[in-house]
Image (cartoon, rainbow, N blue to C red; front, side, top):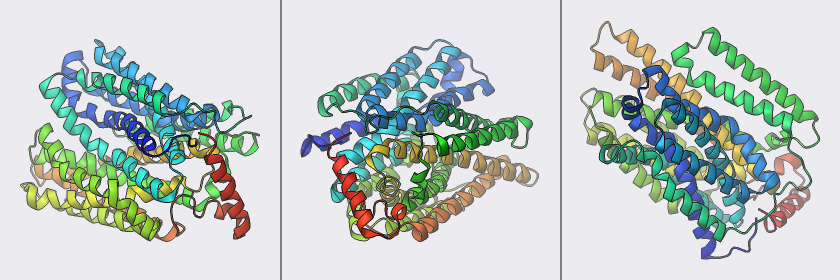
Length: 500
């Protein structure tokens, strides 16, 4: 993308893009608070209610890679506007829904629009800001929106549901979506896609989308159906088989949906592995701690949202300013490792929180450390996942890292919830119900801490040292020949000043 956009106009464009992303991030959690009200109003059973969440996750997780590649082929701005339009219209349908079928179908369409927005927004931001210092600051803002949006969703969901009705958790998206669309049209110049002359790899798109959807379906229903049931194992096997077919197609097709050479870039590969582990840890923090606050300490939904406020404020402080300076001073590797290890300590503190815990002694310290860790770590993780990638593949790289977060979070939450349930069941004979429940949460927090620590160690050992913004771009792909890497970086920077 380039940049006929200069100065403050670029930062205004960043704010608008992040507002669009915030809508998507909020929607993954804002619904959870309103689920009891939705069930009572529309008559959902306990088993059918999960589809209000699962329908969104299914299309969202399944279409991230496809959305990112479509952005590369046909223009990131065009796809972003299309995704915002789809998401906003689906939000209207959700808010007006008077039946179970309409709500679930509208949620599925919301997931599709959300996947497109998430997949191309990161590449738009990366291409808007090509200078290393500005890019680090911009990614800090984006990282805060991604990391803090979920807990903001709990607070907002509680407010809207308590003061108005569950319909408004969806209808509130309408003015935001319209404003984001209008401002993006005004601020972002129209541009063609990067991948000129390429056609969409239809076979690859079908196989990988089906594989991801089957995997998401298996994971989100794993606890209910049983992890060793024929349904779960069959779906996971089918997902792996389709993934294998996809990889064969990508190795042979002339214009692949996902060029496999991307994973020869060490920072790209490492960042995605770290992203899977970190997302699992983040889900442990967000969802399991919310359950601890509600079911063990007896907090109301609004109190849960307020309990997350210190972490959000600390995250904002680091993400919106200090994190960029830390990255520019120390590179990507050290801040990522330190941030994730601090977050691991925060989760470990939650693993000892008692049944009669107090907010100041047993909740606040963990929240402070997790806010600090997430605020420091998200910026270098996103930069590592994107900064080595040629602009023509930036949408795909964005889709890949978002898929890693989504699949890591979904799989991690399913595993941690299963471990917690197994521990709680084992404690039922000797402990009361609340103590058994808390014992299960302790196990989930402990494994979440292990995931975060493993992510920090891997990032610290395997990420290539250096500054963000392509300082070492494509070095792994071209070996140690400095001239080849420099030529590749020059070509990437030239492309970045001409295209979206």
